[in-house]
Length: 214
Image (tube, rainbow, N blue to C red; front, side):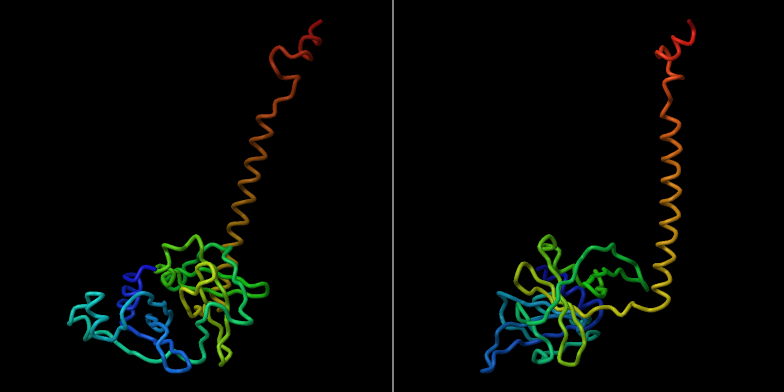
């Protein structure tokens, strides 16, 4: 986990939000940090508040005045345990797409698709080869994305609402242009193959040519 990348995301949006994950008896399990669109577990760190968080990430006082800081309990609507009943695997099998000034990664289920901003995956770069994604649904019926390193949860990320008519039409237009380009490329390759496949009648010194001259 790259903590400085988490801080950079928070600084970019101007929001540092600490969430305390508690046991039923009121004992702190761990803290999470994010900007409200994504949160990441903070393991092996002292308990943070606004003052020592700013000190740890070297946030100057001038910058602090422009940022929003909040510390609150983890919402009960979110399940941040390593496993949740009913979670569904998301498949990372599509290329990223630029949309409205940011890059999104499509993640598909067996019957649907979700999009996540790739910027929110930057704190997880050091474990990218082992990341797996899952869809969970909170108590209000809203879907969210969980990233895991093996079996251990490493992030909770809200999906991007990109499924709009204009976005779909752009993808369809891109797919059509790619199809036309592919067909043109295949046609050129077929023509090249025909030109290179010279028959035996035209091969210098071939048997057919020698027989024809007798």
